Amino acid sequence: MFHAFGDSGASNAGKYPNELRVADQVTLDTTSSPEPGRAAFLFHLGDIVYNFGEPQYYYDQFYDPFRNYPAPIFAIPGNHDSFVVPGTKAAQAPLTTFQRNFCSPQTIITPEAGSLHRTAMTQPGVYFTLDAPFVRIVGLFSNSLEDPGVISNMDKKWPAVSNVQIDFLKAQLTRIKQEKFAGAVLLASHHPPFSYSPPPNAGGTGGNHGCSTEMLRQIDMVCHEVGVYPHAHLSGHAHNYQRYTRIMEFGGKEIDVPFVVCGDGGHNVNSLVRPRKGQPPVEPVAGVDVKYLEGKKGPAKVNHLILAKYDDHNYGYLRIYVDKQYLKIGFHQVGVRSLAQSRYDMVTVRLADHHMVAN
Ligand SMILES: [Fe+2]
Image (cartoon, rainbow, N blue to C red; front, top):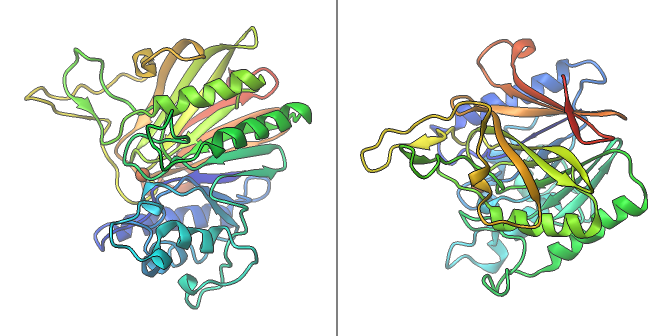
């Protein structure tokens, strides 16, 4: 079992209690859960330190809130952990600070940790594969734009971005195939491939962040080339919880792939829809097919894209449980009910055939 969520950083004192409530609940969840329900680690989905990954805020926004979290913390950077404000000195570049704290060659205590004892994580890079028992998590760095997420230069549209992550993803999926890895394969990116907005003729508009479908088309392309599709995709960035089921043809079979957004880790909670031009926003009905969010047709043959469930009112986090047969992704709300009753949603995927089954 492990925890995952994004967007925990509190950029001002008013947000701080919310970050602490989430950090305290995942800490309590870990310390009070008997094995095998105890989290082995936290996989942070990015936007750890606002506003832009300044070293002087790592203590307040990361080390102190998670000081009692009794397990390792891995992370992919979000846009707030990587965007360089013009005029920033090279030594203060946010990704340099991120790498010092998450991609350290040794388990040292960094200056950002102050007097606390959490050692720097020893990830090989800002994009990396975490090879854990039963699960392999391929974490991608979707770069520093507000929107969209990008993992390549897209035919030189983003010349500052290299294409190395496409090769990395291809190599990781190829390794999974060659090794006949039978565990769960998860993909993680800070920017969500899907984030809700109403259909064109409905009232209102989407939330603060949209879809990153170009990025998804590139991921789909690599998956089709190699012949391996992940069992689920995790992301943050949109400050709410959204769970989609992408029902698609892959390798001659129909598979169900959960796309889960969990970006309500403490910074903010934003509603899924907003008013537009005097039109009131129309909240979606859970279970609706939102295939229009796919945008331009790509290599994936998608039969349905279902918005299975969402929560745009509460802070929360994911509890992800994997064994030899199943992947279970649960969403837990913070401060709504007791910890034991905090689960709001859960999806179970059978690893062997990528089919959703009863929880
Ligand atoms: Fe973000």
